[in-house]
Image (cartoon, rainbow, N blue to C red; front, side):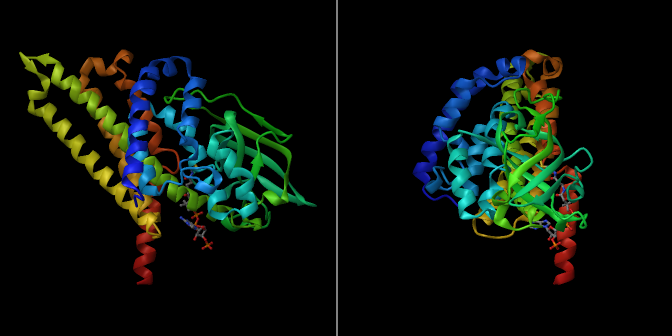
Length: 385
Ligand code: COS
């Protein structure tokens, strides 16, 4: 749903200009230094990007899902590390509070997230609990008007910069499944929280992840999301349904950039006396990429519209996440092929995208987890029909 086309176009124009004038020129510096310049982070705050999904009365832009994905198509036509700066705050880190938090919890945290004064991070994955998220071992034990949290979280995006965590922990030791898990808002400055070294990753330099350790961290009982125990796994799943459409939109944006660069190269590069775009085998790679990209873009917009219309989009979100992240992997691979030897060289930037996009098929649920979700939903619906 687009509420006002003119307002959205103005936002898309400013994001497009920001990407072209500020982010693309900084790509190499970010890849070399593994840091996003603070001036760029500040410009993201000024553009309101941290508050994209937060309601207007808490100081955000309150974008609908369709508006959000259209912004992501533009914002992601550059190194995906830039999106990662705002990603956890607009997405998985804040949405649990928005979906299931009490009015008091929302009022206490969302305004600071909307302005980018603090960043949110989503702490679900653990060393022994990845795809099987419901098996998490971090515990939160009630002690008066607090919970005491102990455990380790792994691969936590933006943890080194986070002001707060949406943390999933087990409140019912007797229930080892999803029903024993609760979600908490945890102030990142709480005593007992410590951080591992920044992970050294295949790509996405400038986007930081690390382990987070909780050692007898006292969290006020008032920070239990929705003030209800045992709901945390469902909150996490709902958050991920939305997050998966978000990641699919990111994949579409990055694929557009990669394909544009590959086409520009094919128009320019000459072999056998003509531009390589004249060769049908190169054309096949361009055409396959364009068709798949178009399909992913249509899927993402459709899923976003359905979500805006209030439908349950668990299946569609997983379809989008699976198809779009696999699509951008194939587009990046073909782009390396079209650029040939230059595709393998750092100075042309395509090999960097090739490494960057590999992550999309892993986080917020691997392709294999999306397959499981889609098939399970199909089977459940067929049995209930
Ligand atoms: N929305 C709302 N509730 C949901 C839901 C959704 N999308 N998906 C599951 N639930 C509910 C179920 O209805 C069930 O509730 P009841 O016990 O009341 O019936 C409960 O949550 C448990 O669901 P389920 O039995 O399907 O859980 P599983 O342990 O089988 O796990 C998968 C399901 C594999 C889908 C889940 O663990 C998953 O998504 N794993 C990947 C995690 C991930 O993406 N990690 C990345 C980290 S974040 S970067």
